[in-house]
Image (cartoon, rainbow, N blue to C red; front, side, top):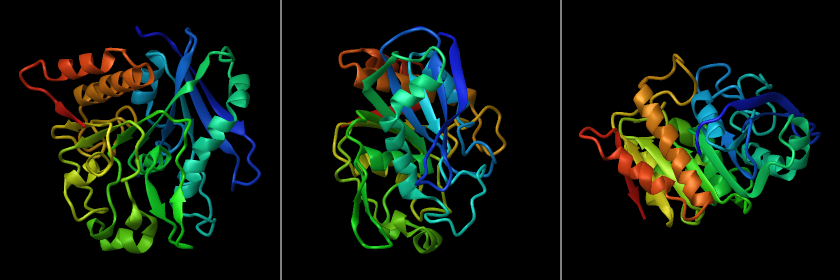
Length: 308
């Protein structure tokens, strides 16, 4: 699908009495087209005040919407924009609530359509994907089928969302156990039991080969490939050469916390994630194979793709 203009509306407020605050979302969509697939996008954390909200990830959101997707971005309770008290249940990262936000969105698509001018009747509710960066990747992995043990009560947590047909994990956390730093294991114990062995939904994992994330893991950059290595197929892995945690700058335009700013790298992420989701949600579409071929056609490719 060729590029088109994008309509973006925010905040759309979903009244949520059982949540610490109402759920605020941004919806971005092409101004033309029907039967539009949906991408739920989960933000990460980070140092900036507003990237961890529905105001982040414009380089991806604008590209996806211009290529025929409706992108829905919640502001999770972990967002610094909300400044919730530290004793709010689930603080500070709200791992369960983040995943539940996405289920709420899917449950209330009628309300969302009605709140956005020119959107009613244009969504293809049978073609839904989830994407997430960093902590958002953890959220997305739970919706795609990863499991963990609730550190509060010891029960296994299954938040798999069957309405989601494909996923994109961007610099997502890997396995727990001895892969974690002591700080993470002590302060965020839910990371310790992450299990990808039942994450069966088709997923593209995007990882930078210089993304050391030393504050999270004692492993090297390969930790971010765990959702590919440890999950069953079908899976694809896009390894970006010389990329760090920002993957070239996907969280926003010209943001200071991007340590590896590279517009060409961001373009690769834009094109390949779009193509992957296009093909997964429309079987038989050649976009994914074409994008893979394009990635390696030149003399100095910015990454490589593996699949299983």
